[in-house]
Length: 406
Image 1 (cartoon, rainbow, N blue to C red):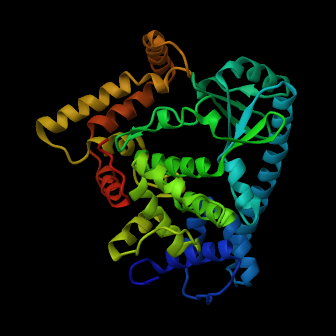
Image 2: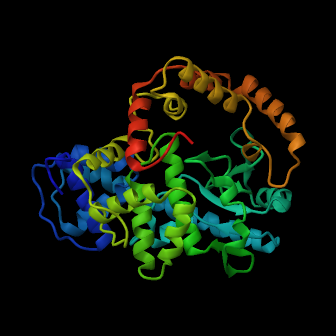
Image 3: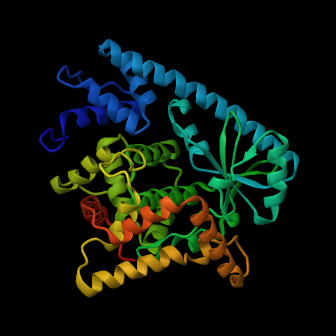
């Protein structure tokens, strides 16, 4: 890595992550590194456990306060991981007992590909059920002590919590999400045809299908507000875990079909050059593309480490950034109408009659005006306001190969 193109602290942070991936310590310690910055990076990217594990393995002489912080974070993260695992096993057993087919994916599966599974943090655990089992699942989860989180739920995602784990129970793999000219909700609508049976009523996504989903999920986060290095680490460790057992021809064909090939190649390049991956695709990392990596490291794991705390000014502002005059005003109006009258795929369960969409809109408006008026204000400010971060975010999307005009 060219030290002149990336801050020394960020460069060292990435080297530690690469050592975690490869299981090596083949780089020199750097006494000029500011460990306060390394620690801050580890926090905003939810990688404190990774940094702590590698620092101990390499025998790095950390400042006492930083070492204590990393140690405490590691212990808390590990404890939380154990609790989540115990809680989720209870959920899986309950779903199997009630004959409810379910699909495990995302973090709960990805953690198994990490050298130390507990190092992969999860704020919540997602799983998928069939719409026909929605009420049965609700009853089963409540019977084992889960509380339904009404304010956090909608027609498509029902959320539950107990002292051990927070659940997001989906009936669609992806809801309303259209960019780059592709309806990704429609692409993943046949998810039940792409499964590997594990045991009883438990299923996982086929590995190629899951990998494509992970890339789409990463693109979704970038398209809306951004994503940090941990999501790239997921891609890296997924491919290292399966090594030569992935059908790359199928993956590349599908990525081209859904117009994510250019984005994926940029992601693979970052993974290959900086995170120790060995993905058989990618391109030479040019100086201009270091800007992407620098941005990724700045914005944090979900893009929330920003100057602006109104994240809608990024997600909505990116759609309208850079357009002036009549065209710009027309674009803002279009985004506004999508906000007020969202598509059926984001409001109705799979297979629900489209005539129910106006009723879903009314329910949504009532909920907004009774409990979330402040949220509506932030969204409108994002649509009609101007935000320099949104302009720069749009620039990065272009460099990543994401066509945010779709």
